[in-house]
Image 1 (cartoon, rainbow over the protein chains, first blue to last red):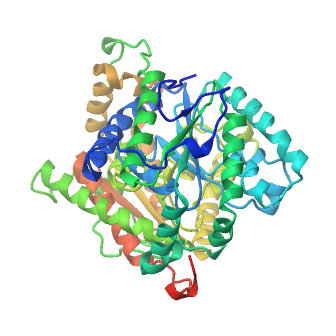
Image 2: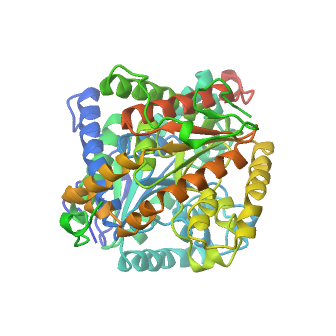
Length: 269
Length: 269
């Protein structure tokens, strides 16, 4: 269990949470270049820590990234793990569930891809979609969704008790900035493949999504897996804040290379 | 199907293959720094190509890395994909099979982790272990192993016919260099966790392993998935050669961002 209770971005477990009180923009850095340098410094430390975690092969780290379309889940992953080789970090992206997945409970596909010993796994979206888009669009009965908050807390507690550290970040953007970014996806030919007209349908439901996020954080920010609400209107600032949290989390896990007890003189090569 | 028939490292399909004729060291670069610069240049291009592959979401790339202990499968992966974010490249590492895996055919666990559309997957070891260590240590009957070459060729042809490009690299090191690297793992405290006394047992069987590799390449270097024999005694040279092959392979695949047909004026945001 590795929390950062003094982080200005934590949603303190047990306290009333109001999403509207949380900034989508902060001035923690002189300028974009300053924030980029900070993110890269963290990314370099993360590479070393991830390698130690891999060598130690006992602890596991799960990083959950949730946020509205264009909030920067891909970009954050790239920046934070810019220096970490693919052997030491993996990404699980959750899209609309397949027929086979829908034939199981909603945690079934999630459980299959949690990190194993020595690994970092980034969830690009997650089981939280099942209390977000599923709630807003009413893809499941209200009573079923109401049960999920406790089910998710139980599932995450089991993961933590069995050796996984969980870091949950909500990438928080403003309605205006989402509009700019969607416009940009349409206007730049090389980005147009990312544009999905369905995103505009979600955008129309913005207040409903914000309500669902607020309830999600209120109900699932636990002492063993609290939420951090990341101001994400400025990309370099967002990256630097998440990278710092990941670095601090790994530092607190304090992974060390195991000593197998061999001495150099034990073997003739 | 994306071959490089003019590569000096290819094991040309249909021709007699003699491993002893293949160098473990070449002088393609002025010095280590020159080779490192080359690898990094390729790695930067690979990042862009991998992103286009991801955007295109139709082709798949499988990179198979095989080699004796200490040949550098981890190090090569790190150097080649140094700039590619984890969203666009994954690693599947094959260790000794579990009881559950052994209860299935040997390709079962492999098939589950082949790349999906838009993805690059690196195999750190692979199904080829089933005609290498399994053969040398006689973990399966000789007749079963004899059948595997054709089974593997059939499996790979199916993958290629259904949209996967396969690049197979054998990281070729000398017996002397393996000795140095194993010694180094013992002598450097932070590397000692990598040392496995079982590796010394395999080292005693070096000629048997070289015979198994030779037969493997002879029997499974096919027009649709040929082997490349990478001189790997010098790490930066090895990395630069593999990175160049990966870059050339991706360039030949020529991934392009799809045009979904939307025009900027089609949507009000």
